[in-house]
Length: 340
Image 1 (cartoon, rainbow, N blue to C red):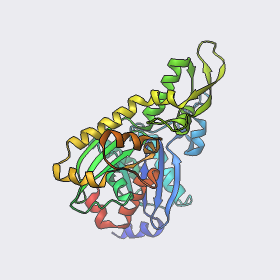
Image 2: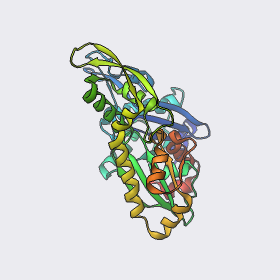
Image 3: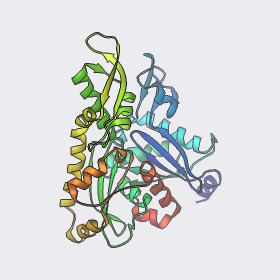
Image 4: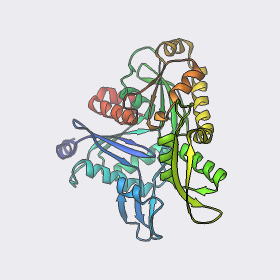
């Protein structure tokens, strides 16, 4: 107890949305203090961490042989324990202005389909990185708290959280998850689908960052009012030289058809398996969309057409999980109810 209060004097408690694509950190009493890509650049031989976050993301696909820029999380779970631990340590220290004497309490958002082994890996990585206590909260629950849904009431609330690595749909009532479904198809799969489509159709090889840029600029799930085009650069696989190409939104919609269909199917299955009393609440309230992937143009229109339900995109969809984890951090009785 004494050590807890001692470390508490030097540290501010943190809430972390440890995402496949981005990590957002909230400091108790300060709001969002950090929003960085979940990328780490490591020296191949010495394993020394050279850059984390934005600096490391700039290196993706551009590093010499002795430097490896990697994402330590894949599909929302840890793929490389040591690198993930180094990343969490970096974020803890950066949130505390590089002070070394810090042992914060941390709340971390994790996918709802996570296994016991994966849960332990997240907890161990955070403890090894310097946390004194770790609470895990399921991402759909955190997102629901973050967007302000009345989770404590005896009524059904449906949330669809589309991140970088996972898409999760959950029905929440009385501060608990009644039904949840998690699929490992989300923003990253969309990027890969765009890369594969352009490679197949034009024999053009593009990088990860270019694919993400295309998705964010002209990617859509539903026909746009005005057709859009974009100029892209890559390497011609036939000639082996750099090449510039103009693509349009209809092509990218075709490329994204499969991952988008998986997301729609996930929502449909969740609606089929929701208890009837809660389903009637969802008819009135609709489905709330959160996570970066929900910002894909026209996704709300497509879901509205497919389900016939009201679809609401959260005001700050990108930060919903982090904001919810932050709210739980401020209220210990809520945190004890919703943590896993």
